[in-house]
Image (cartoon, rainbow, N blue to C red; front, side):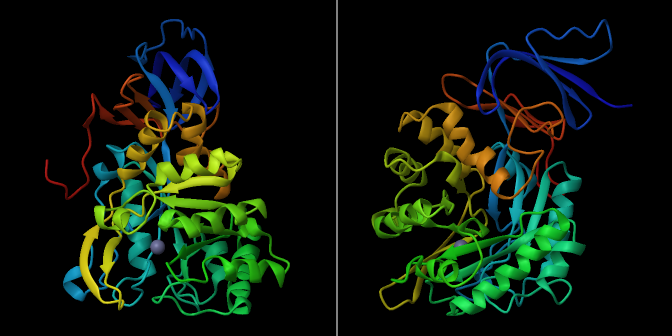
Length: 392
Ligand code: ZN
């Protein structure tokens, strides 16, 4: 029998503020939103949310959920992500990618992990490809992957301006992007090209060259790590003026900040202050990526692991430290990435959308409850469900 849950009296951000509303969840979908929903005695689970804000679940557009890294040798390969690492941070939708290593990591492994997390209650997708081109694919063709593999919604993260990248020409990148675009069109997907931007001096120059010399629009590309330093952020703002999208990375460490990385929330606040449309801005966690620390000669001298939950921390920082309104800040971590990636049932609280819902404390923004496709996975800030191999 379909489970029915009535969330009563929360202050709803859809992301636009809807005031105090009841939200009815039927199965995996939002069935109704209204000031006072009466079900005439039907048996439902009632959640009293009168002291909470209700927000759409977070959409994390870049997570290495099957593990990544390995840039310091085999012992530095990072572990897989566990379910509650996402749910306790309010993330209900994740897009997985390979990264540097497409030799000991594979797309079938990434897809299997995506399906596993899906079985455990999350919504997951993945990118074909890795840092390099020609892209590794499931089927031998980027276009075919997008058409034939349900969870495959684009390619990436393809590395540019990075010593670990394939040192691509604009023509090579344009060709791969065009294959993703056609596959996306045929399958009703975004066909997005996720771009890892390194700390090289060429910054976003290759993307400008591709757009200058092809028929591809800037919005085909989703460059991330734009908060790596101020010069790259400035280049990102120029890219936005051309109609592009930019993404900030929330996983960081003290060494990165000391070297000039701008905390993701501060970078978003800066873009908003400079007049960039919030719909062009997003943040992602880069969860389970290795966070390598290189010396001036490019030698690896340290390694840490990215956290998926850093995405919610950055959302909180955006509201509490940078005075960005909740209805704006939530777009950056939910509505905008869902729109860029053409995930129509994600990133909003509306009838027929997937019931990915957070209940949060209005004063501290601490997460109380997380519903993912209608199932309550977190309550009172505690995980109700753990991943299959997570220790309780
Ligand atoms: Zn990256």
